[in-house]
Image (cartoon, rainbow, N blue to C red; front, side, top):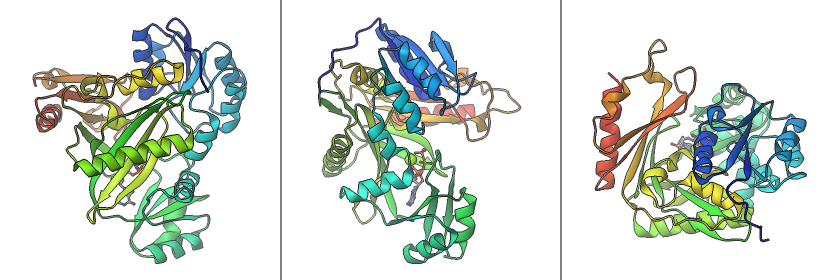
Length: 379
Ligand code: ATP
Ligand code: MG
């Protein structure tokens, strides 16, 4: 399907105005687009960038339709939006990615079952809907992570278990309903691949990012990732195949694990900008945010080459004490470092408040710079 390009000057709608929406909206603004946002939070991060914000719940189909009526195209920064709202938008204006792929991706169990049915490589897992099924799954899989099927992010809605009897509490603890029990994997390296795809089928694949998580939350990411070249080729091919099978228009981030035994497995999918590609603003010829705008507007996709090594380090709310922000001027004493804040009004432990980015002569130097800058903020 080809699409007449939606050119700068047009209005782009965003379902979701968190930090991903804010940064994508800033990229769109730079290109000359107008922005409208729908988000339930009156103080959402994208509000200052949008010319209009609709404050409504995700399930408010009338609000979705109201956004759609004013926009040449609608995209999103969060996938957990009820299909009814997605359909209400798509009935009025193009929605990218569409409700078909979003329906699959937005539910962890459905996403994993789909990946398995398509033959993509995954760790052992079972979908469970009762405490007893969860106990049985842990008995079969051994040490596991029980993950809620709905609404989890940054390691929330997850419980680690080693013995099968713990499965009952874990199932209830992550909210019951439906959960995925995953075998605990022996991970050697974590990586992600970002893919952009247009309605006419044009694709652009980013080289893999190397990612480091602490307690289920991303701490830092760096590019180039420095993986074995076969790993990079295999990861990029896998991400591209998944994007094409899903029929994504927009972005798809594919999180992967390289195990100690050499297997490359898919962890999960995100049909939107991704925390592990925030360094694309510094390191790549086209940032993930601009690329998303190009893809959903039917413009030529930008080059994904790495122009300079780049890294990011997340800034969580733990760095704020009694509401007082850390001394960002300290971080800026490190060469190559920039501070990116999301404008969130209140800091809570674990809440993503912003990130540091840096470029360097090598990926090691870029990473060392964000880590050094981060240490200065911890004081
Ligand atoms: P996010 O939204 O930040 O991507 P999430 O809440 O969806 O996170 P996952 O991506 O499922 O959570 O897991 C977060 C991290 O926890 C992974 O990047 C990895 O470090 C670890 N992890 C997840 N699943 C497993 C597993 N099966 N075995 C070992 N470690 C795991
Ligand atoms: Mg993840």
